[in-house]
Amino acid sequence: MVKPAARKKPEPDTDAEGRILDAAHVVFVRRGTAGARMQEIADEAGVNKALLHYYFRSKSRLAAAVFQRVARGLFLRVSEILGSDADLDDKVRRVIQLYLEQLTKTPYAPAYVISELNQHPDRAAQFVEAVRQIRAQSLNDDVLDTLGKQIRRRVRAGEMRTISTPQFIANLASLCIFPFAARPMLCAILNFDDRGFTRFIEERKTVLPEFFLNALRP
Amino acid sequence: MVKPAARKKPEPDTDAEGRILDAAHVVFVRRGTAGARMQEIADEAGVNKALLHYYFRSKSRLAAAVFQRVARGLFLRVSEILGSDADLDDKVRRVIQLYLEQLTKTPYAPAYVISELNQHPDRAAQFVEAVRQIRAQSLNDDVLDTLGKQIRRRVRAGEMRTISTPQFIANLASLCIFPFAARPMLCAILNFDDRGFTRFIEERKTVLPEFFLNALRP
DNA sequence: GTCTATATTAGGATAGAC
DNA sequence: GTCTATCCTAATATAGAC
Image 1 (cartoon, chains in turn cyan, yellow, red, purple):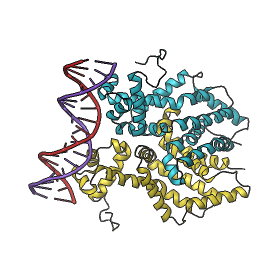
Image 2 (tube, each protein chain N blue to C red):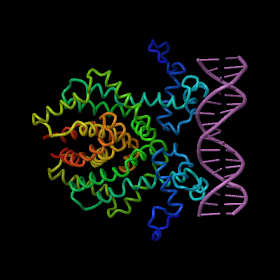
Image 3 (cartoon, each protein chain N blue to C red):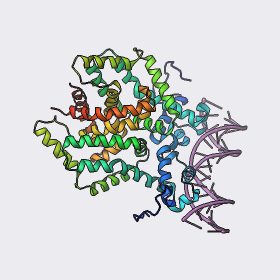
Image 4 (cartoon, rainbow over the protein chains, first blue to last red):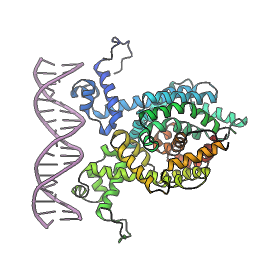
């Protein structure tokens, strides 16, 4: 279904299948799976509705393909960093930097993934599979183990407060991802317009590494 | 529409309008507005579909009523704490405690509000209005101002690192709310089942205040 | 106020020409 | 492979009896 062969056309026009998937990506992320309309996807792709079924058979299969793609995108690069042999502080700094930049480009991804996972219980299995695949690809067999060892080493050396690996990861993910997922909420509470939010994220690029690393000082 | 009069029946059966709103609450939060079905709400309320239209005219009005309710619920009590005259450390501890307990009882609220706000742009205005109402109700005219003053005072006194009020609030909200909003995501990554997640939140009740307050030490 | 029955439209899916 | 035309079910909404 996916041809890894060399791309012939450098123009934005890909083959129909690719255009449809891209269009579906846009529409599903914007409206959610339940709110998306096949017609809107077809329009966005510049093809006929029937062609969506030709390539993807049904709306739910198309939705699954898009979800897989977005979920992977959210964790692929971060997983590489966490699985690398960099120093722990360095990992933290790089993860924060990466997320704040990546999510600035794809700001709707977190809210979409959160929505899907909560409304569509069988997406959870799909998500677990995506995570498993990413883990298998990364240099380290288990990113979590490596990270846990790094944390415990630092704690034993007295360079860091005691913290469990899950809490460490949850805190890091929360601080990076939540502001994007809850952007309209934050903007309402803090009286931000788009410009205000952008500056807020810029500020965050320096605030967050300090905040997080400081929190772990012994 | 809402009668604040004394409740006649102590049984779970309220009047039809209340039962419908409760049922709508459950179903909309579970499925999202687009995914919810009027039939399912009617079943959940134990009434006929037509009655939903009798009381709420249309699905979108019913959805708006539910959203208002859930959004208020997310911020009402927290706003009381932040607007109180308690010490800053105390506020932090009480907010964390409140959120972790409240969200344990209504774990789907954050994901629902996030979904709605991202998929349904005009919910944003509704949300702003809900926040404005809560602010007007609370003892303090502007919770944000009060909090900002407390933060700056602590910073000037050298008892806290410099941090802007928006970053302070965003960090606190992120750390409290995200794990619930992204529960299936966290569970997949950290290999948690329901039991594991519950223990994780229990652990978090002690971890989080330490983490947050420690992050702000000078 | 609450029901049954029905109207109406929207939207996913397919058949078949080209 | 891509289109036009059509089918068909699901879902919101209303009419009208009780």
